Image (cartoon, rainbow, N blue to C red; front, side, top):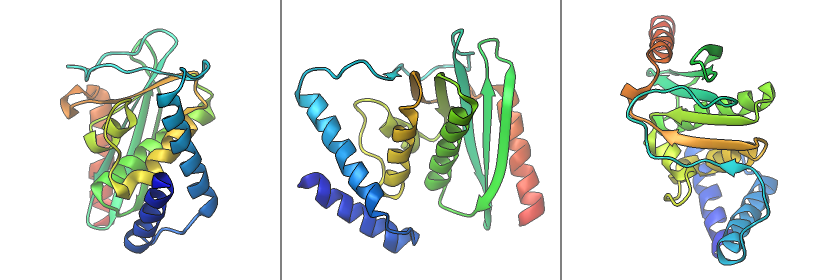
Length: 202
């Protein structure tokens, strides 16, 4: 009952404050997901599935282990637009993919969450099986780590979508990092996107 009431409240707030459409099918799936989490916490360990890697925040950027892909994300904002950037690197630290796009202006936390959701979708489309996602939006990444607090209501649905999509991977992790820990080349790309956006849409 508590999960149902929480979902109704979150859906109502999202519809009123974010003008988001009401998706009953998604709400039902989200309630089932919450119930499954509660059952797993109270019962025997679940059968083997996607491995969620947890680790303390790194002190500096480092490449992923062999066989893994590290995906760094960020969002830059102006008064009218938001720029989302995603960079993927292999275990040699070599950039193998990079994407950027412009969207309508939304609050910073929501922009960062949308950037991560986009990154997960891109990684899934690439067919990668072991993926590490990193970003400097603590409010987005911490709730996705095991044992952390629930996400802000404004990104609750997006966070749920991220976790559902991540089940596609064999192993994955969501790690918050300080901005200084972003790869210098990735930071340069993200900064370039931000400058381009401000010079073209302000």
